[in-house]
Length: 274
Image (cartoon, rainbow, N blue to C red; front, side, top):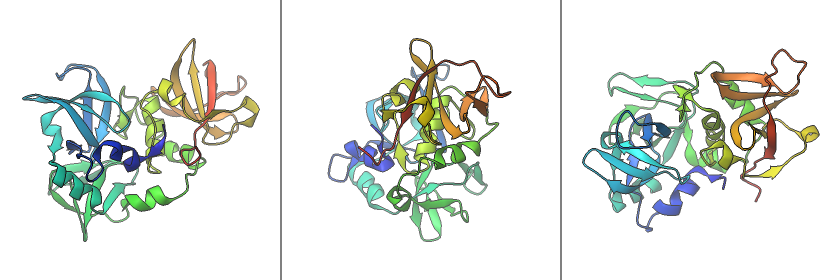
């Protein structure tokens, strides 16, 4: 179910509730189907994402992310936390990177992408593994303020269009590459909300809307007998989606932007309306 980003996470890592087990410590962390580098990337976790460690091995850990997705992450990409450490993290002043493209800190040898979550400490930011960097001007916003704002569906396609031309990456969730459901998930994450990971799961959210009632921000689901693709309606019969790259296409067969994809569902997903 769509929910607040850290609201969903605290289902299993709220203070006093046992604590999560680790935080993603790099800007973008790969989650794989098996504990090996050559395995399929099923998703990613962005810096600051709390994960429940289901199985910890010498090199890899099987984890569950706040949206219930499971996969294997190599241990050096995680900052393992005790209950007390996680509680301190959750109670601290957290900020989210809102700058659309990658930021780099040469001294700390790290990069940041939109959606990364860090601790604010004065004029500096603390990464999940304890490294400190200077806060880039205008690149982050307090997470609490982002989540407190009313959800704005019309902002979804506007956010997505910042990434036009970004290459398609199976399981991707960032400006380094993203898949169709990853683009949708990150557009919601930019407003502090979280959706399920896959397109077919997202198609179960919200409510169905007729074709003649589509509004900017509605989700359009494509496929044959089952949902395999999703885009964000942008108005005037057009939508933004990730297919080969993030691009804008049209539902109108007479448009030069038309793609012959079969629409299976049109959903309006507002996490603030239950």
